[in-house]
Length: 474
Ligand SMILES: *[C@@H]1O[C@H](CO)[C@@H](O)[C@H](O)[C@H]1NC(C)=O
Ligand SMILES: *[C@@H]1O[C@H](CO)[C@@H](O)[C@H](O)[C@H]1NC(C)=O
Ligand SMILES: *[C@@H]1O[C@H](CO)[C@@H](O)[C@H](O)[C@H]1NC(C)=O
Ligand SMILES: *[C@@H]1O[C@H](CO)[C@@H](O)[C@H](O)[C@H]1NC(C)=O
Ligand SMILES: *[C@@H]1O[C@H](CO)[C@@H](O)[C@H](O)[C@H]1NC(C)=O
Image 1 (tube, protein in one colour):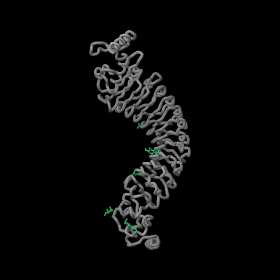
Image 2: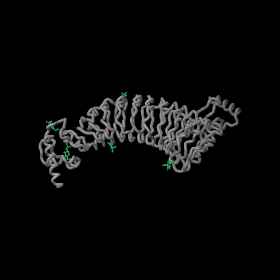
Image 3: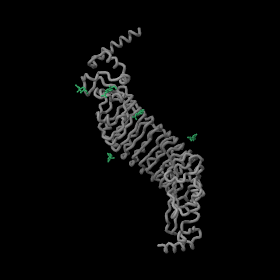
Image 4: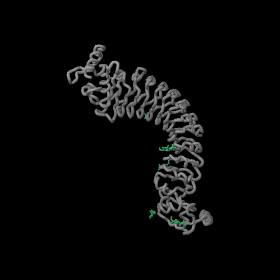
């Protein structure tokens, strides 16, 4: 084997004078990599890392003196090592990034075989921007991840759109500004685009429809405005779309329903309006539907009941009106349902309490009324994750009232419980806390020491009270 290697080395040395030679431990000579490429790697490491002796410590980074963040691959013709991956992040951060770390375009250009470049938590204080010359048609990058670099600012260079092999582009949690360059639409191989948690502005370019291979789109937590472009409906492979926490406006687009493989749709915290289009029922694989905090001002549509895979549904703060539909108990995989801060009215369907996986149910701050008829097992299972507070017309059964469950539910006992009518034992006052939360008329009833409370007694009571009120006013 050794002799074969040596022979090859000889051939290579003859063929190209650019090959870097290294003395190995036996005193023989062995090929490592091209000199220019090695130099490029040393320069990049020197620009990033605190340790000025990195090159000295890792003279043969592909073989004898490896470093966990650098990977190489051997190419066949000619047989030679190339740097294919550079990763700098908390997991391999010995030495750490230096305070004035930067990304030298000239040096990176010396690494023409680099397929993965990922830099996490590195540019922390000294401002760094992405030079347009860093990228382009020459680049062999397939995976670019620059994440959690607070001092990485400036715009996303349009030249990134020419990196034809790019499959993963992840620039989340930096401080990037400006618009999403429309040129990115040229990345036909791109499978994942994550630009979340930056300061991007302007509209989402319609050219995004060119990203035919895209499965994950996350542009949440920016300042993007305007409408959701119709071209998004062309991206049939999409499984996850997160547009949350921007300033998107207009109606929830109909064409989203074409995304048959979508598992997650997050449109939360925008200015999207209703109605919710019927076409969305096409998203048969949907498991996560997060629309909270949009001014939808509409009813909960019936077709939501066809999303049998739904596990998390949030419509908090959407101005929803009308009743809670009866179909929710058929969504057997629901684990979290948030309908809080709306104007929903009517009763709470008792069957919700039969959902086997439901672990969070927030119905607080609506206009729901009637008796809460959940099984006690369900109420105990959810504990504080069941929130029905702020529905003035809601009451709990006497049974729950006695067990102090109605205390943390902040819901008074029903005067007429469907569960145990004519049960006299409940009327004993339980605690001061409890009294505070009760409508004042109930205290009145208590103090009048009425043993059996029903509607027949209440009416005359109110009448007397009303007369007294009138009298005092005079
Ligand atoms: C975001 O960008 C806008 C200009 O587009 C700027 O005024 C604002 O200060 C930036 N915000 C942050 C947190 O950098
Ligand atoms: C519900 O979840 C389980 C486990 O995650 C899964 O096997 C099942 O297919 C889901 N049901 C539906 C209707 O998707
Ligand atoms: C339920 O929603 C209300 C209103 O949005 C919120 O204040 C409360 O914290 C939520 N409850 C739970 C248990 O998450
Ligand atoms: C309910 O609360 C009151 C006052 O805090 C307490 O005296 C009573 O024992 C409690 N009842 C139950 C069933 O926990
Ligand atoms: C009244 O409530 C108590 C306590 O929950 C229960 O033991 C009793 O059976 C109830 N009586 C009727 C008539 O439902």
